[in-house]
Length: 399
Ligand code: ATP
Ligand code: MG
Image (cartoon, rainbow, N blue to C red):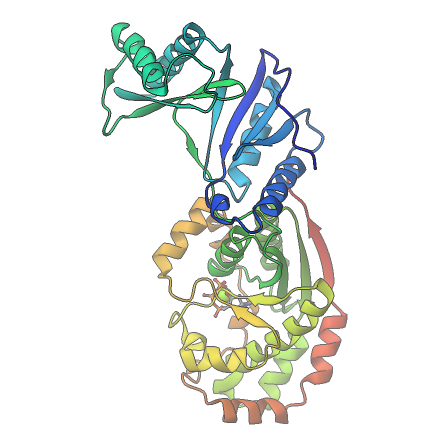
């Protein structure tokens, strides 16, 4: 993809300056990462008259005023950026810069700021004033107009000036999602339930650059269509960050009945987990995923003791990633609220795991015993049949 010069910025267009952060550390494959980020931003803005460009470690997005809502939506969902701000493009004169700085200061005051600081970066060394001098001139103008007081240590508002190939002035930055551009980290398969944890686990891996597909097990008619609908809604939310996702929906009623009818009751949940892993292996085959992602968190429930997690993982033929393993529930809930999955996750529809689940599940299963029970149950054909009966849904992102 060619990185074009920013030319012909129209006066009434909306211009955004985007900071790339961690990408700058990845010197080896920096070009690939940057290109992927630009591509992802373009995917978000497909069909809009917006331009995405990369120049000297910054991304610029420019669109029509009426597209600004769309652009800001994209920036709130784009992983791989540390911050962004809507900027004013000014003529390359100190007068124009000062005028734009005053406008930013007034805007900051209207949002409640009481103190400010001006920061300038000047990469265009042909500009006659130093960055210090530019900051001083703009700062003085704001101060003299009585708009705000200066505080260079802990200002409420930072007003930034960048003198580059063009001149940009902008106010407080919005925080980006950080992480690495989606699609640079291979593909993973998320075991997505309707709970709070697994969507957060999926988001965490999307934020490390993974493309994430999802796998959900239901037990109609014991679990309701609403329970599945909830999982679809969660997949749709994840799809907005992960630039789309495929959800595979596998009917597990017969598998669960088989477990209920043939296994020791206290092993039921653990055996169900082992079966899920076996089907996840199959799904990895068709989705091209290199890892299985779960929302397991150490000690959260009986099936998540270190012994039981180990038994579950013993059935996986791929790396099992548990991004939440060391997180507390409160922290997980905090992320779920931030990414917008919490409200859906807490809707009161049952998951298949609670079906036929034992009152006193085995807490510390041994691999030998669990494997012996599992092997004696002849689950293979049940799992093949369940997987063959899967339903597939695709979720996109907003353009
Ligand atoms: P979650 O909030 O993600 O449901 P949880 O705390 O309820 O997690 P468990 O029910 O023990 O924990 O599930 C552990 C993990 O197993 C889940 O995070 C998810 O990755 C996977 N899992 C559980 N139930 C299902 C299901 N019905 N379909 C797909 N994956 C599931
Ligand atoms: Mg659950």
